[in-house]
Length: 113
Image 1 (tube, one colour):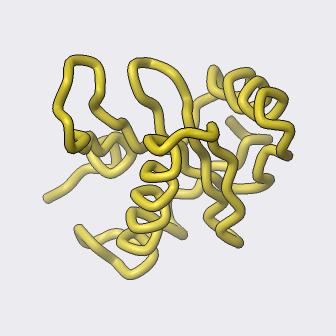
Image 2 (cartoon, helix red, strand yellow):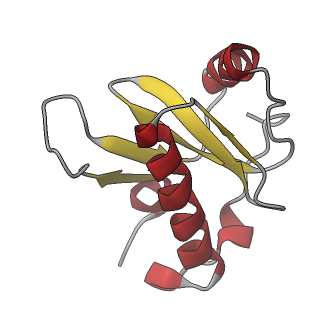
């Protein structure tokens, strides 16, 4: 049986496999609020509101996608563009019951984080 912790922290290796290139896909914690705000300022985009899932690489948040409408925030890099695709795929998996749990039972909003 897959635990919520395993669903929240799915590690996907990137294609090149170089050290520090693992992409971590997870729901945000309270410590991520500043990182998401900083990313939004860096790329001059609004931070998605409500429930989100984020991607980090080398300990740095590079992308976030809203669970509710699919709005994305990402660095302007090929890696972040790929991360958005991975996030959308993961949200789709969770929404449709992959691993026995739907995303609606595990939502976290930035306001609650």
